[in-house]
Each structure stands twice: as C-alpha cells, then as structure tokens.
Image 1 (cartoon, rainbow, N blue to C red):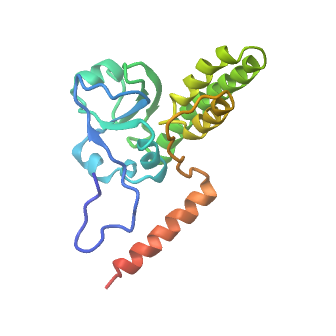
Image 2 (tube, one colour):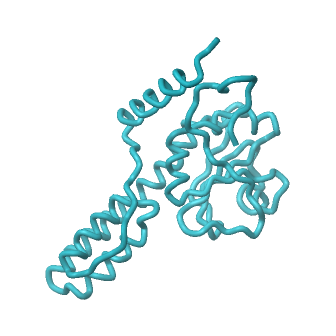
Length: 209
C-alpha cells in the first residue's frame, strides 16, 4: 500500500508500511498483529500510518500489519465500542495487548510506533530475564539450561539479538543452532542516517523537474 501521487516518484519516502487487508479466520503465525481500523477510505489513503521506517522494520520481525474493515467481525471482537479510527495491538490468538484511540479524529504514526515499541520492549525485558535465569541454571545443571536457552532462540524472528546471545551460550554447552538473521537498526540516530542516505539516493534517481 504505497501512497499514490501524480507522475514521477510520489513523495520521497522509502519506507511504506506493508499493510494487508485483515480477513476473518486468518491467524498470523507467532509474533504480534497491529490492526488499523480506519474511519474512511480517505483516511486510508492519506494517513501518516502508511509511511514509517519503524513499522516497516517491525513488519519484518513477525509483526503483522493489517487493515481491518470497520464492519468486520475482527472489529466486533477487538474494538466494538471504540470511535474510529483506532489501532489495536493483539496476539495472533486475538488477545488485546494495547490500544490507541484517535485524537481529534486522527491517528498519528508516532503514537502507533510508540504503542508497538513499548510492547516489544516489555517482551525483550522478559527475554533478558530468561537469559539470566538460563545462565544461573547452567552453573549447576547444564542440561536443564539448554531448553531455557532454546526458548529464547525460538524468539529469533522478533528478537534476533537475544536469540544470538542464547545461541552463543548454547554453543558453549555443545549445542549448535541454525542461522539467526541480523537485527535491523532501530537506533534513532542511525535510523535517521539510513533514511537520509536513501532519500538522497532517490532524489538523484528521480530528480524534480
């Protein structure tokens, strides 16, 4: 869902969020689901939620980005009494873990990014605790520590850095795991540098006339 525009390169933006139409009965595998319930087709086309580097990166880490019809069963389950537009963060099983109501009839992408990042940070803290528990267990019972580390490795899609840490500890215990993907850059300063570089490249590729 890339914003439209007249001729040439529409808006020099490079991180279009891969929103997909939510369908009742489709259950994303693992991770989280960010549902966007727009108030109108016009909002769907013009909303700031369409372009976001953080949301685009989270979409590569098992966070499904789904636009849901206001009249759907999904809304009836997750946001029946909420005034549109509204964003809902849920588990694949349909448990709401966060919700963002609109301000003056609008959802701001910065607020949606914060909603998601806060939940991810909380989950990351839990993994840190799991890693510490596994290391402590390994001191007295290496065999018991292995499944604890494996549980962290299983989160490699959403938390590749933590999974790599667990994989290193497993290797010390003689257990090899498969390849783990590199984590994308979320650091604000580095992210700004990446975006600036890409925009400059696009500006050169699609010069204004």
